[in-house]
Image 1 (cartoon, rainbow, N blue to C red):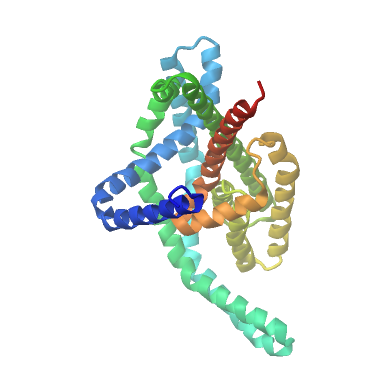
Image 2 (cartoon, rainbow, N blue to C red):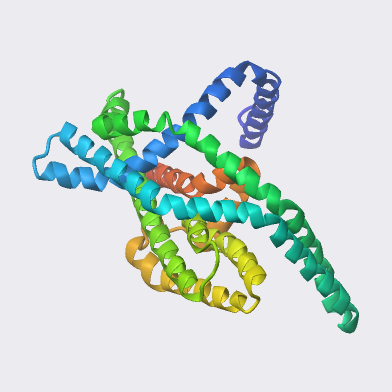
Length: 359
């Protein structure tokens, strides 16, 4: 019986559950390490994102025989210039719009409550199935009205906390620009033979996936945000720049992000002038169609080759597990895992074919 597969699998499952049980009971021992990891993870993540965004510029400069220190200095000066432009040109209107939004948050909440009251008054004149839909909608509107002002304040607090964490970002960023070629050899040089080649190929695939996703997604988000900004300015929507910047970050989340960015624009349009809701919806729809049919196919292509249903499932699961940060890193993490699994499968297939090959 000990050699039966079902018995071995059962014993393996039981041992795994016991290990998990006792690990959970002593997990408090690892709390200091978890705290350190949380403090380091976000700056490391942002440093990696900056590296992949600026790496093409470094590659171009070094192809023109610019030394490594020169390319790093040029990139840092370029980033300082971008930040200066943002602070000097974009910063004041963004600050004004944020202040106006905070001041007008109670008014916006009042308008949402007014919409709820109007829906309740008209509910009796509608069929029963519409009444149930209105009940659901008014409950949602009431929740939005209560949470809107609190959400704005929490968003600003989180923004300033994130700015505080950025102190560590330049350290990781410069280190990656300087020594990024040494990371792969540092890992695969511990091994030899076919295992070394497998790890080398896997690391190269991971690098290619992250490079394609980060560079492509940021470029797509920037183009979409620009299209939305132009559209909002044309129709005279208030807080157009602030909404476009919000859309820039939300569009980093595939499929779901653009709809998250659409909700505050819809609310602002309704409060400003109800007919603007139609124009905001048309602008968003046009931008999404341009993205789906023109921008994304030409920039991303089929690099990640992930089905849309898989993307939505992964994002929802990651959001429940790790919140907003989990949503942001869900797709690149899944793509990295997929690259690793594909390499494992390819290696196992080669071994299987070699074993079964007739001599």
